[in-house]
Length: 438
Image (cartoon, rainbow, N blue to C red; front, side, top):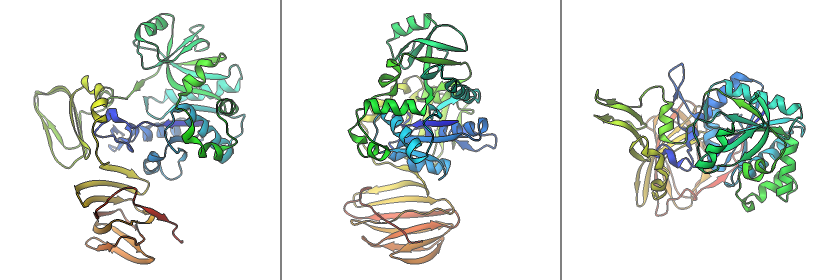
């Protein structure tokens, strides 16, 4: 089974745990049987592997999320990188060309496309296999997954099947109608569109060529920033007359807000927090090493991270986005392919960061033109390379690098260091990468 997982969005509705590079799918809030926590993308990836260990999974995502994906899923995860965000149709078109030209997938192969962040049970992925099998029967150009609606929502597309069978032809598909129209659709037996569909790879390639002028993957990648922003549902599904739907009636939640996300938490507290007996329906997620005490609260979510603090009524938390849009600040936490960093302090001409490198990983070999850096190793062992000269390092060692010198550090064991940046113009753009001779 070929699966394209769509991983996009900036996740502002889950501030302060999310930011421009850490969308909701990377927040680790789901407790596994061993007591460890995993993120949405880790959970979905694990569920796919459990249902179909041979599935070929490609994640379509923006450049900003690639490091987080490799951090959480490993370097072997296949990623179709969008140079910039252009909505789902361009993303699916580029991922289709990636499968054909980079992964050498045959055009006749079925492909299943789904979001990376649904909260579902394993039967969801059994249904994905059903979609893939249905495509091979060539009874329709597109096969959608339909979800039984619970209320007339304006957030979803609506699939109106011709009958109530498990697999049906589709009479009408409408994307995000108003609430009244949605209610009318539901009365006619409509299903929610969960953003999941399957088809032959050839179909995706044909639709891409119909709507975009390009020759191959490299050409589409090069002109990606010129493409109009449009969803696959508007560009393709609403215009397609030959559609089938497979019903899914298992667990399914769209965890797009704090209100819905806390419903999926298996315990009320993640991190260092205490709730007194007078608290009712209170959820706390605390990523900092400081205690949080909640007393007499009802129907409240408390979220604490390096980005900020949220204290909100759970229902009101759904309306957070316009307030977060007004906040301008530097990203304070990010996961990279080699580990993670957390900003500890920001001054006018200095910044202090705690860096954690995973064993066997290293930073890019790079330099900065407008700042000096100092590394203070606080735990673990590693190897520092500065202008071609290697040095083994351990806890207590200090390495100083002047602006312009090339440097990197690799971890033998988990390596933690405090990085102090000094300069009149400290910017993420002040970085030049170099190839490292092996």
